[in-house]
Image (tube, rainbow, N blue to C red):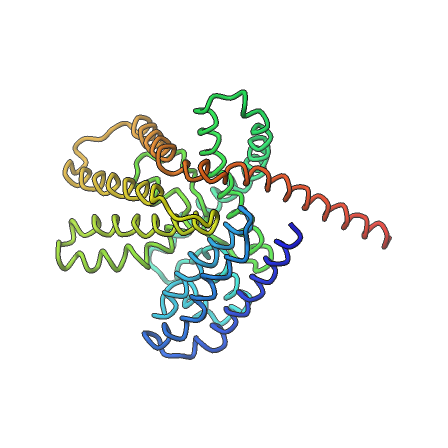
Length: 365
């Protein structure tokens, strides 16, 4: 773990230096192909840097932040779009803001224009969102406790039915991602004093696949895939298929890119050739989501399932297909056991650091 921490520090020092290059030099290069070419060295660096890490949590998190999110943000930045370009338009934002937005899985909440005619309504929505964010923050310690209890329960896996273990893996994946992203948000909010968009929106309350993937699950990824994949494909499809059917190929393209990125994540974690099961999971989700959107257009609101029924069907479909196609990658390559073991190592490492800090403070006073 000591060598892994050292590699982690090196990787992130190089990453921060790369973003500084973008802030001081690349932003002055004209947008378009010229700026895109100037970013090729950074794209390459962010692709190879996570290869120095071999742990499940540190390596997986670094891949997610650098290879996926940061590269996609820089791709938008090359055409003067996306959160990095928006950050530069605000004169009060500093280099620190730019680094956080580029490297952390966060999205800054946009305030409504004060002169907008819909400002009153926007303020009410903002107050409502703030209340919901406060509720999510209150539930975060509970989710951390549930995650700790879940890892403790893995000690008794030999006594549990395989279906229960699969269910635990589903809960583990959700809680892992929510806690990790929430910690990044808390850190950014504490240091920068900025209000952030929520990373998850209670996905277990989804009433459809479109609602689950588009409005509730991992909104950081949704927010970066929408302008980089969904928007351009929808724009091209509108000219060929018309406005009504343009979202369907855009949905499929978005899930296809998401599947490719997840396959790449598993390659970084396992260093074995992909089996493409994870890709097929996302292709299946894309086909079914597109079919759901088409069905909604066909019935035009004349018929609708009760939200309890549709919500239950949505969760069952996502969980069953996940157990079928997604989670076998974890168990086949031993990632589940590796993650459980690393969790305990990280907890011990953190507790040792806390005890050392307490000892130093006592020594000073």
